[in-house]
Structures are given as C-alpha cells and as structure tokens.
Image (cartoon, rainbow, N blue to C red; front, side, top):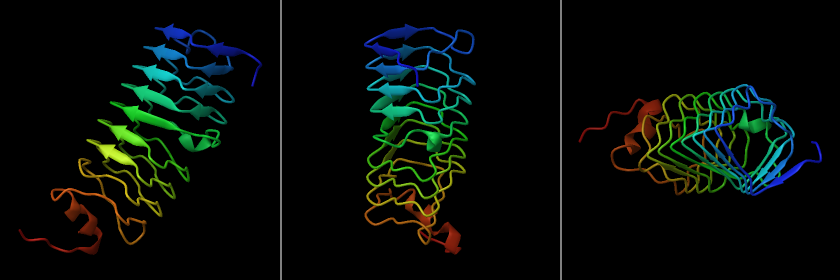
Length: 191
C-alpha cells in the first residue's frame, strides 16, 4: 500500500472506473454515489468509512482492510470478501445487493444484514455467530459447515439451511420459515 492517508474526506459522484483510484488509507471517509466497478482496491485500507449508493460490482478487494465499514444502498455483486485482509475485518450492510459474493471461511460474528438481497452467496465455513439477517432474501445462498449459533433468521426468506451440516444452537427462526430447515429431510409438515 502506498503511504497516502485521507481522513474525514467526502467523495461524491466519483467514477473510479474512469478516474484513477488512489491506493491509500481512508479513515472516517464517506463515499456517496461513487462507482468502483471492476476497480482494483487491493491493498487499500478503509476504517470507519461509509459507502452510500455506491457500485462495487466485480471490484478487487484482495488484501483490502475493511474495519468498521458501513455499506448502505450499495451494489456489491461478485465480490470476494474472503480475499480481504482478515485483521479486524468488520462491516455491516443495509439495503444492499450482494449477489454472487463470497464470505468463505470469514469470521463475521455479529454482522448485520438489513433489507438486503444475498442471492447465490457463499457462506461455507463462515462464522456467523450472532449474525442478524433482517428482512434478507437468501435465495440459493450456500450455508455449509457454517456456525449459525444464535443467528437471527426470523425475518429472512428464500433460504435453505441443512441443520445436519451447520452449527445452529440458539439460532432464531419464525414459525413461517422454520419448516425450511426440514426440507433436506423430506419431512412433510401438516398444519
């Protein structure tokens, strides 16, 4: 990473797909309506930054530090979050599209997804202890050997989770969506 440092800056309507993105440390910066489509963000650092209505589709986050970062109304399609710098990795998502992204083997204890679409997302071997999936579409999302202990799926929908291959102690489900847990067992529930 370069020795550039930006603190408390606001970037609005910047198309980093056209304008060169400066690999640097960004602290408490805000990015509004910015485009990072196919941009190489590798080896950059974002601490306590907020991204609002930004498009990160297919951006490269290899070795990128994301520490206490918030994404609101962002498009993050095809992102390999599993390639981020894992030290102090912390982020939350509200009203975001994270389709076809991967969180493979990450420690995401306490992560909060609210009003998001996570279609075909990979959570294989991911620690999602105390995670909250609030009003989240999880169609075709993979949960395999994941730790879902105490996770809240009570308002999530379109998910398929096999309890035989995931840790689920204390996970929360609503009466409307708990039957999905039994679908791999071919059990018929009659109300």
